[in-house]
Image 1 (spheres, rainbow, N blue to C red):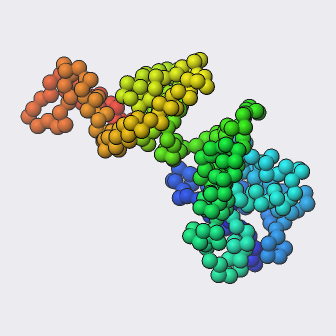
Image 2 (image 1 turned 135 degrees about the vertical axis):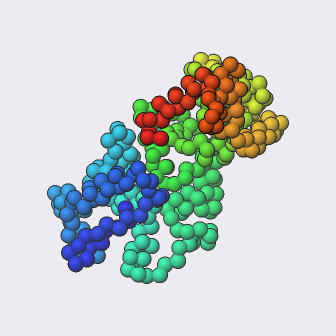
Image 3 (image 1 turned 120 degrees about the vertical axis):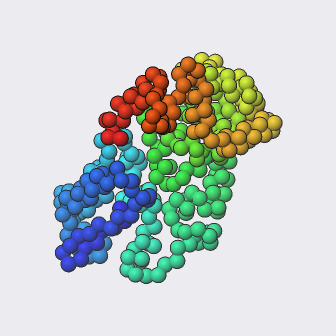
Length: 329
């Protein structure tokens, strides 16, 4: 949500989505707009609004935040934003930073003032909260210096909202000072920034780590994770898998030392290039065909008018017809 406009007794919400909407999301967007316009607002000056949702008739971001909460049980870091003991100006700044807004710049532009979009520290990128607080080279160097004083290693989040999301850890209440909990993070973004990875050994996680060229230590506890741990070890890209019951400081440190060897990293990068150049779909289809029984030949694509299919081909043709009836093909 960008801002609300009030002109000639008509209220208009000006929306700015962070990505393009998909066709299956249109119903949700329509419901979102209905929710916004369900509360009447009256203009009182350029930056004030009166909301029916508040007893004081004052527009509050907190009320709209609660109204827009998903029904899936996920809870955002609202206690970090609206703590009773936090000054109102500080709490509002946290919310504004989470929405990636620069109040001074936005308000000036609404009044048609020309404001350059640049970072006054690095003189390179546009002025956004994620850049100013996280990704500016000057800021990043400062963060690295601060964390190095305490011996921390920090994976920089993509934006301020991701940083706030990290504050919610469910039932986890106490962790060591040198551990940073991250509830959710895309592996295809995270792994390319890692020297090595340690994970449970799921098929998707293992493939993503190897595609990123990361030596891998697998700590299996269920299903096919033991198989993938053995496979990674057999090709020399990781140590012997460590079952979760055998995980210790010594075994983990030995595994990390193994992965940090230059020869292991070199082999991992070579495999990553092979994965990048591989046509996975074609390889999967070929593997499927190779495992078909030889006595069941594939049906031919088409038959001549005077050519009769053999019994096996006829069965495949009938199965194809019945399978396609439900979709009208």
